[in-house]
Image (cartoon, rainbow, N blue to C red; front, top):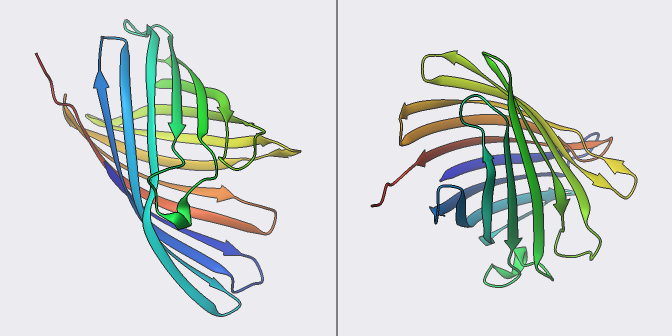
Length: 212
């Protein structure tokens, strides 16, 4: 579960936007290598366009999916996983509702580069729920220990297609309270166009409930 604050800006303009969101994500392991997942998010947004301010909010995301860890990567070896998500086009508030179901297909590959540096890459396809044409998606993540139980990461990611190649950046830290509880904090920048961008700050809590 986590909270996000984000903002949008446009150079040489007073057109701005900001929002605050809460995300609840649940995962249930059916086996050691396969889990099903569900997520929902609530947002409140405010935009200013040519001096006119507008606010709106509600349930903006319902997501269902699964993940299969093909190679678990234990023993400091490579890891490989496949994930399929579906963002639903029903149940959300009208202002956020998509016209169509929005699938996302991802392949994860991870491996240690050195004793203190690990690499994770994500490659996949994503649909926006409006256009029938998918776009490519990529992530390149480097993670490393900072001190005992505290780790950090730097990441570039983006969407490709229609003569665009998005390059966005984020970085953050995670603190492992115990084997079943972790706290996370991250910040990032999103390049929307040559003249506009966005930023965000995320804070989250992840915990695991064991079942017999």
